[in-house]
Amino acid sequence: MKNLLELISGEVKAAFASAGYDAGLGTVTVSNRPDLCEYQCNGAMAGAKLYHKAPIMIATEVADKLLGSKVFESVNAVAPGFLNLNISETYLAEYVENMRKDETGRFGLSKDEPKTIIVDYGGPNVAKPLHVGHLRSAVIGESIKRICKYMGHNTIGDIHLGDWGLQMGLIITELKERKGELPYFDDDFKGDYPKEAPFTIAELEEIYPTASAKSKEDAEYKARAMDATHKLQEGNRGYRALWDHIINVSVTDLKRNYKNLNVDFELWKGESDVQDIIPGMVQYMKDGGYAYLSDGALVVDVKEETDTKEMPPCMILKSDGASLYNTTDLATIMDRVKNYNPDKLIYLTDKRQDLYFEQVFRCARKTKLVDDKVELIHIGFGTVNGKDGKPFKTREGGVMRLEYLIDDINKRMLERISENRDMDKDEAGKIANTVGLAAIKYGDLSNQASKDYIFDVEKFTSSEGNTGPYILYTIVRIKSILNKYEAQGGDLSTVKISPCSVLAAKELMKEITGFIPAITSAYEEAAPHKICAYIYALANAFNSFYHDVRILDESDEDRKKSYIGLIDIVKGILETSIDLLGFSAPDRM
Ligand code: ARG
Image (cartoon, rainbow, N blue to C red; front, side, top):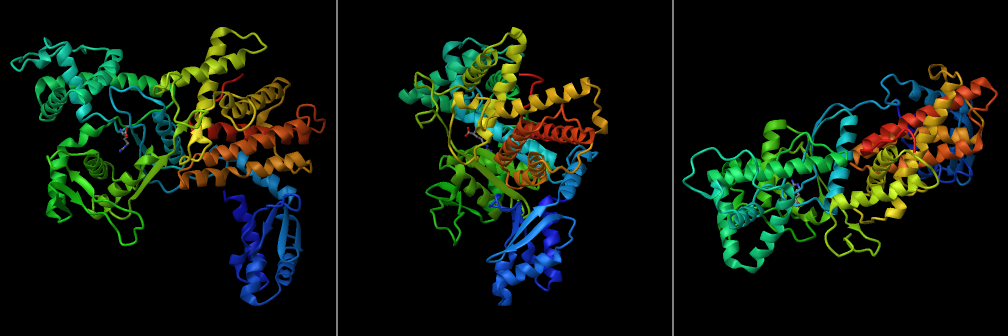
């Protein structure tokens, strides 16, 4: 189905044309003076300049052409030349009923011509626990991926593990200190290594920071760690076997953590997966004349004439010949192009990597790793802050582990749910986790990604205001009305939305029509916060409606069916939308 605003605009454009003016003047927007009208068109103002005519004259001529239009209840030309429009109840109800009847269950939203899109998100580093900084990448990336899929695109999420480099050498070095007798450190060992890892995830999470701290104080220790990294990268058999253990133990734990966040990845690739293709890529960049030596390092210039800010060259190899984060990302682009032929690559990281991605993207284009048609998008997100406005920390001032943050929210949610009532403990716990996840995700996603936000447990878990729990309460309330309706013998398959002069019903219908544009722009701008803003307005419109009308007690049977149809589509839209945001609603709360 066409977006309602486009349909209305089409009608007004035709009227401009038939009055002898440019049809392009007929664009209609939602009124910014809802006290005066529902929609407005300001085209006569622009037309006045084009046609050297008073705007009110143009507006009046166009309004005359719209007399008798089925789309509008009223059309008024008002000084100095605005067209104030109110939509016809019949037209609006028909439009909403068509959305509801859409057999694909997509409320009239059609799919796009399918593209292949890779979303690179999550990006944890193995052997390090997930902290609050990883929350946004996971939550926003998951939502963007779901939105792309919903629009019909072949979408692949890749976690892009940080599983290569010095951190691996550090862990191996510390293990050697502690358990030097293990066969992994015996160069003469020719047998099979044990299947069982020689450490647990808890040990691993302690080993890494210990080793990292030691290396900062002890140059000799650091040299050993660098040597171990080198040996690993050269394929030392024992070190590779240890590395496999580190990855397995770490990935098992990561999978559990991401599952709790309702986040999952199609690909669990990492930096290590492209190391083999780096030498060929470097050679290609040299042969093509793109890369040159500067102070011993191999670099590619990425400056452009129009740059207003400083744009340092993109470093491909350090002077000691080692590759960098850049190098891996470029090789990963090469790999993705070869294996998936993507139309679009979307990356999610902290916005402090904005410049970094600008360099990488320019380098990839300049060296023709991707052709011009491939869209490269970096979404840099802001910081999660505590109430003091500083990056979120534990009470002791340490980095906040993601697990603890989730526990905190779930605990607070459980308290809120259990307030003033008895509920089975197990059920209450499950509900608290479902609602808690909504609280966290909505709290994050309702902000524009690039902005910092304050992680406020009280606000996020509240059932009032622009929060996840408020949206879920709304869904649960509708479910309960629909259940009652059916229990009273009502049949959802026979309901039909019909024209209605009740203000709250018309307002609700208008909000419902916002679904198609909201999802479309969330996709086009890779902006889940647009969905949040839309469902918040929709939930508000529903709650005013619920407050103003008696749904189940309505005596006019057709009107009651229309009300039921309306709340049924609201429920469907809200459920679809929260699924796109990556959470779900319980049956009761
Ligand atoms: N592991 C990286 C970090 O912790 C994030 C990876 C983001 N993705 C990428 N392709 N660079 O900063």
